[in-house]
Length: 126
Image (tube, rainbow, N blue to C red; front, top):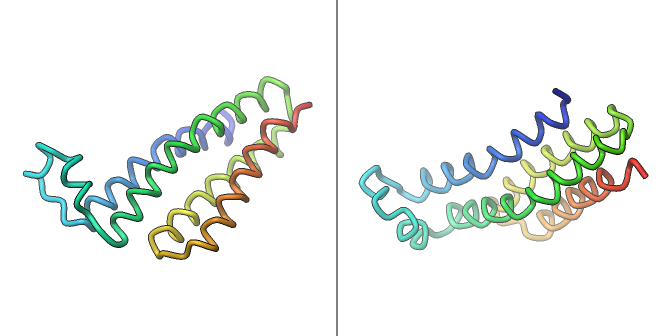
């Protein structure tokens, strides 16, 4: 298994971890699990921004997954594919931190850099 494929696994788990953070900082209690969507609709501040980061992380998954698979299928240089995949993950972590910290301008720059990694992965084998 390549490092890039391991990054796919981490990218898939990341939104779940972010949701856990949103619930933990939003005051989630086990009894709230009967209706978690209602609970999540009522959170505010950093917990709400974490929820939004979670949703954006799910939205970024399909393109990242496809780009990594395409790069592998086209036999792009593995070291470059791995580096771009790791960079994407690191940028996503920074993105989440900036989202929770309410730093929209920096967050947007990091989002664009992550998108750049995804695009590079998709075209690197051509």
